[in-house]
Image (cartoon, rainbow, N blue to C red; front, top):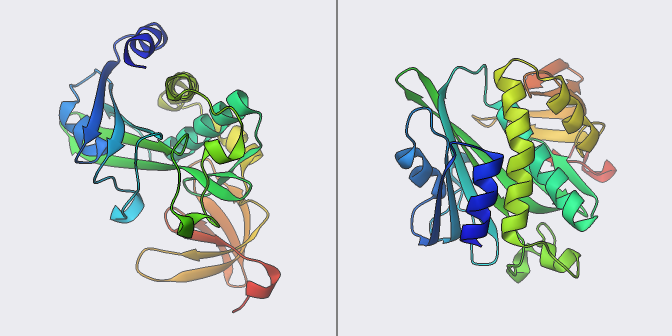
Length: 258
């Protein structure tokens, strides 16, 4: 897909440096960060990643057939990572829905769902650099890759959900077209559209949830909103909390209070 995708990306995103690789041993996040030059966004796309990672350093499976890429930006002066994660999630969800017709939802903070199963994940990292922070946005989408049997209940791949999964290059271009628009708005301080679009796609807002915060503290209550900083607003018996980071579990009625 490389040359045709490069041509489309040159038109879509002038100045974007693109790097395509077959087998990447280390995470595309690390590669993109290393290759980034100030003021020149850097895109790294890998056919497979042997040592991919997700949030909190967790191992991520990235075999051939999926779409695995990282986009490095900066240095930039931004308020927080939360809005970038939301923009990535919305861009991925909209692209999948547009190309497949599937109903796609978002589970806070970074899961893209089809039929309540994870089809894609988002990882946003920030690193201090001269002149501001460098942001690396990682996206992994299960497209044509098959999944281990033990993941059948929690994850899915587009090849299982539709007879004609999109070409990975086409999906990449669709995601980046949407993401670039959101990023421009966020940098300019206009966050209304990304927040509104995220709320419209959220599978978490309105749900009873259990949130495991960094450090092991748990909250249980109702997810009532995502605020303008990208935080999940949870209403509990102890009050209302705005959560910046954590693992969210959607609770069935029988799970509440257990």
